[in-house]
Length: 223
Image (tube, rainbow, N blue to C red; front, top):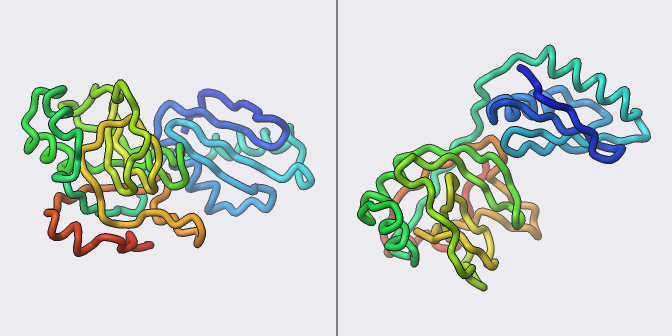
């Protein structure tokens, strides 16, 4: 495993930047297994991992040296997270035709490409529990954000833009093109329910409106 840079973030965190997303996920997994007593949080996102520590237990310079040594000894690995199957009703995607037109595909082809790809959760952000999923198959890449973002995007909406797809876990403003909607609840902030984590994998499964109504409000199972 080769780290490109180590950068301090204030006096309580160090960010490691890698060549690949796989190395970042592997380091995060290894650090969690190591259970360092002075580490308070590990936040991977794409090719970077931010490691936060308790300054009362370790000085920044010593923590950075220990982290650098750990990375040097940590082998690259093909970390594989939990696989989540997400049902998605593409009939409820208001921008499906827009995406089809932008990609010069039929709506059915957009659905086939979207459901035929296994995605990795490379980051969680924007709003609590929003999974940034990558990467889209080449025929779906390059779709721009909407010129005018929606003020309200319904919870469960599945959108895409650029090379990424994602799921809006709660009603929020948003500018991604919406191609479908999942009936499942994927976040409950009040109860701390966050079943999808960085490093996990996601596959979408096309469902009918009837199945959408049957599943509506159910939780994505925790694994």
